[in-house]
Amino acid sequence: MKDFDSLIPRFETALEILATGKGDVRSRMKDVVCVLICILPNEIPLKFRKEWEKMWYVLSKYEPILENQGGSIASLEKIKNSTGQKMAKLIYEILKEIKK
Figure 1 (cartoon, rainbow, N blue to C red):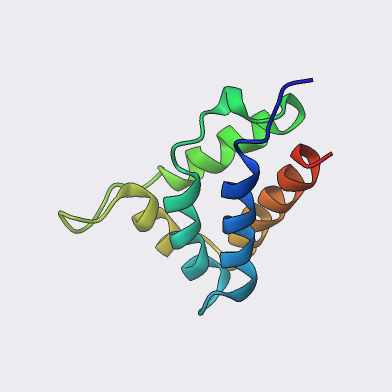
Figure 2 (figure 1 turned 120 degrees about the horizontal axis):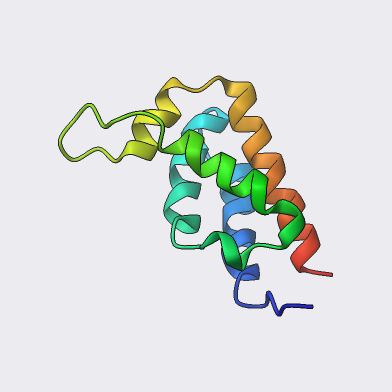
């Protein structure tokens, strides 16, 4: 099994932000994106890889409105809160898996 030790701190930080950050889940996901954006799909456990790629597809769906605004931020402003909740659950499930 692949060693996921290097990912654990990032996912723990992301989960802490989701659990304790201010605002709705979409607002908290903006900070989470900054923590997780550099993780490549091949670093994620295989059983979550398709969902991980789908999450980043959704996060890059919309073009930035402002010059200094990333596509992820623009996308998060347009998604439903329930979509943000699904993303948060995926992050939690991946963390559980990589800590096994």
